[in-house]
Length: 67
Image 1 (cartoon, rainbow, N blue to C red):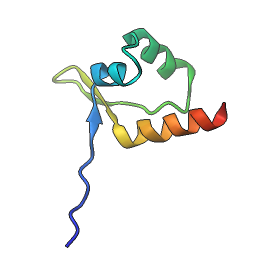
Image 2 (cartoon, rainbow, N blue to C red):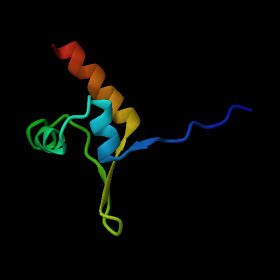
Image 3 (tube, rainbow, N blue to C red):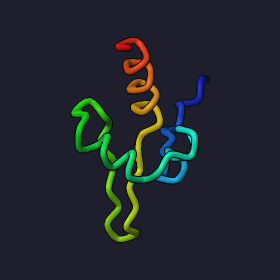
């Protein structure tokens, strides 16, 4: 029986590292300016935002193709 793939999430720091250690403001600006940028899941009790890794990969692929 095949095992279901678990969803993976990225924190702000992991996303920054993935994009070459960009600043958090780069991501903040992208969220504001690009309506196609995936929206994070908010965990208010921990003050954490998490992005679905699959959605980030889809966004990255679409961004490369668009160029």
